[in-house]
Length: 141
Image (tube, rainbow, N blue to C red; front, side):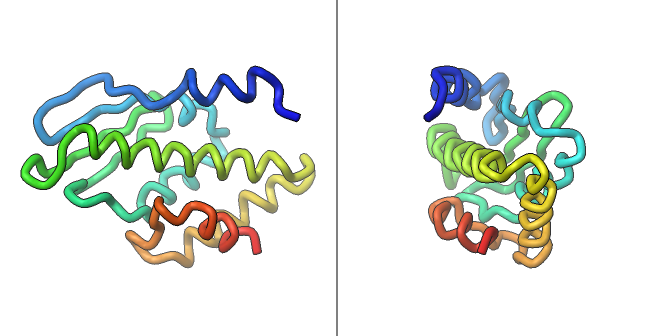
């Protein structure tokens, strides 16, 4: 059974826009800062492999600050749609984190390795955030 902290924390650390310009959003994602240093490269590879929503041109992750910088085409999408896509990415990151945490401590490194192997195999733009459940099964089967 989950503790109150485990239930509430993901909602308290949801992504928030900290700066905006037309076609550009800087989003603070506190959960990124909790990624262990040895897994930073996995987070960066995940962002590189996800399928961008219509109009999103690039996403850069800064694991030190916990920020994402998203560039998008203002003629194709808007801030609301970009944030909806961002929440799907956030939910995927939380699902991966939860899945890995289900493994016993001595097997977590192996589970992270399986994720890394999967990311090496998948093509750029090959991860569809709308198919989260299938993605998690692909990684750990």
